[in-house]
Image 1 (cartoon, rainbow, N blue to C red):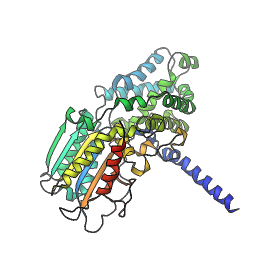
Image 2 (tube, rainbow, N blue to C red):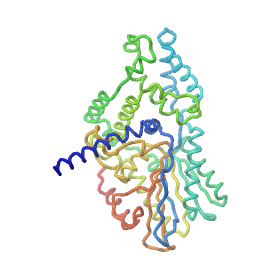
Image 3 (tube, one colour):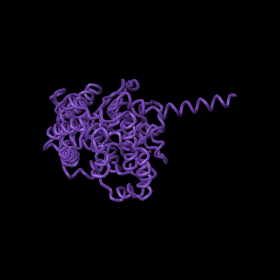
Image 4 (cartoon, rainbow, N blue to C red):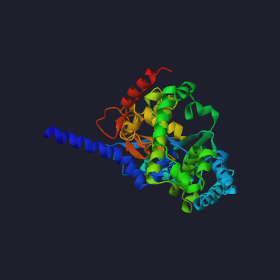
Amino acid sequence: MRNILVGMLLLSCMAVSAQQSKNEIKANRCLSGSNYLAYPGPEGSLTKAPKGYTPFYISHYGRHGSRYLLGDRDYGKPYKTMLKADSLGKLTTKGKEVLRNLAAIKAEAAGRDGELTLLGAEQHKGIAHRMYTNFPEVFEGKTHVDAKSTNVIRCILSMENALQQLLIENPKLEIRHDASNHDMYYMNQGDKKLEKLKRTPEAMKALKEFNVKHEMYDRVMGLLFNDEDYWKNKIDARSLNHELWELACNMQSTELRKSIDLYDLFNEEEIYNNWLMSNAWWYIAYGPSPLSGGVQPYSQRNLLHKIISEADSCIALKHPGATLRYGHDTMVMPLTCLLDLDGLGKQINDLEQLDDENWRNYNIFPMACNIQFVFYRKKFGDKDIIFKVLRNENEATLPIKTDIAPYYHWKDFKEYFLKKLADYKE
């Protein structure tokens, strides 16, 4: 009887886990946007440091804020598909409404391929404000802030908005900011071998089979077109569905979010399954998936080396300030997995189990996502430096032992991760 009860309890727990993301997305469909999710901000309060310890240095890597999509590929293509269908009398009343919305969305984004939106700028101002407010000791007086960005305009503008906010908080700050190819070897590292592993026959086969199981667009096409033969044989319905889905997800990042809603094209099941496909793709492409070698997070080995070496240099200073870096989701996600923050470095063989294993991309890399190392000491010259990691401004766990959770000893971190990096064979 006891074994039966235990078994029932385990099954109940598994069912709750399997439903968690579905329930979360049902409560907030914007989560289904994956990397298009507008930055939600921190969820709770921060744990006080052990007695006597004061923050003195922050090392940070963050993604650019909310952005526009890319011109003709993301805006023009679905608009042209719908416009041609309208000229042939193939659109329903709902299809005509969507066409009008696509025209407005396309016009707002004209000439702004991939650029930062107004909301994106506000996200970085808010992050900088909270960074200053939570750790004022780091930014006291004429302290130095070193900021770097990739040479992409949305990243540069994200950096500049954050720095403007810090100067509002403390006009005495001495800021150096740069965006150069000189730093791209760690700010936006490329790796041809790892890129090739993302597209192995095994990975592509598994992803295709997963997508075939979860894709659903017949109902949406029926909403848009009055001729079934037309959408089945004259257009690429699968691509159009994906294009409309991407636009629906990204609307939350633009000012038109206040007046246009493309999510209403999709029902709850379609929203959830579109997210499942995105989640699986990101896990293979940038996560620790065995299908892509289990090594994709090592694309950020140069960045992690840089974080460690610069932290060591700054720890030797009396008042080092902050090192801020601004880049992309394709850096933050693998760095999160390389650090195994909150267990997100786990290898999961079955794509169907990602959800149950709590690997949910919307929790990792929304617009403006960031990782902050906050360093503490009792006094200058201390040998035992402690720190904590904030993931999207929430305290995160690391795969190393600590007697002061959520804080860790820097020496333990270095020993663990320098060995992990050394053990990787390129």
